[in-house]
Image 1 (cartoon, rainbow, N blue to C red):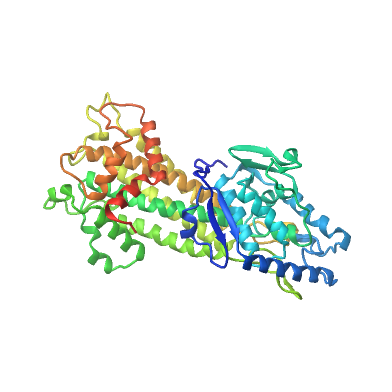
Image 2 (cartoon, rainbow, N blue to C red):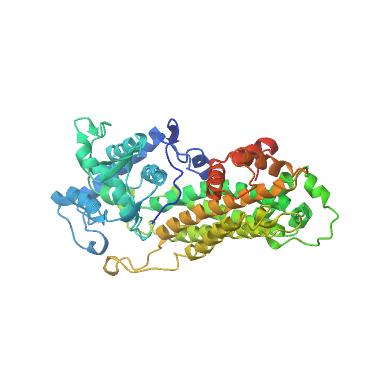
Length: 525
């Protein structure tokens, strides 16, 4: 699959992040998205890891038959492994499971997969050695990121194939990304370790291979990154919608606080509050306050309901994904020196449903945005057709709308839920799977399209506001218009609009527009 957008290139110095007894939340992760990490592990975490390893070794030496410690895995769980082959089993698990295909995942997702796996192991129920965690930590802190194919996970017995590829560099195999280069690990190992970093491959012990590849870290890494992008994009969507409303001489009345108190969905209430603040001090609104237009089209009048519903979906997805980030999701789970339970904590169904819901909710942001762009091009209420004068010789923004429509239509295909599918694997042992990995990667593509569609609306709304001069829009649209015009000139004749679209997309993703608006108005919801 392709990843149209990878906003994860390392920028600046590494950000310090401490893994202790504090949960990882989307709020904490937002500031470190796309940046290299300097992760520190608290003593309490190391103590848990070391204690659980002692429990695991006691179990391994007890002679009991325990899944994944001295048995085969999956449908081979009844095959007992002799003590002298237990370590070899763990390495072979990694080699046999590293069968992913497709284009590599973004570096930022690989970075967070490592982070979340280290965090999960640190909860102290996986049975790995401290030295094994230290190896994964060294890769992360050197920003030596495993090359991980995007396809191959069923999102059920953990994200097996992607996590196996993540582990390969730890045992001297696979590829890593470093400073924008792809390095073959095996050929880069010298006396000073992998690619001169001082990191030396390790030999896995009992339980470790299975602990490293069982888990939901592929799904949660995508999910967390999606939530970071979604929360930023929701603010941008409100700002851009306010620009379009002003350009179209829409009404502020649908955002009345009294109206939304009668149907108090939290997302809609927050969106309406944003719109009231964004539209404050508008000369355009004042100029047509007594016009004969009774109601605006739904894409203006109902945007609080639509944007708000997406906000509520993001809130739900945040709860589900944060729970899994801070959970033990491998198998078997070590409870004490006598108890190892084979369960289903790795099953991705909670994430699959949340990621499908998130993808659908994000797609609707683009859907309503495209409708507002369509209204801007109609040539009504003082705006020229296609937002340009002398049409005929000029096509204006006609085809930019085509692009938005194409992406919205593609999102309808991508929004089909992955979680309703399942296919039996492992000779029937794993007979129901979540397909949560598919839900994650589809939602990522939807997110790319949403940002592009909103950037097209922003380009068109900025052009529309030009025709309302000398009247000024509200503070929010006024600031946003100024930021866009610093990068993109008003169009008087046709030109290569694709360059304008890309400039607007870069502005949106950089958060410059929202940050400038918030500097003037305070933080938006």
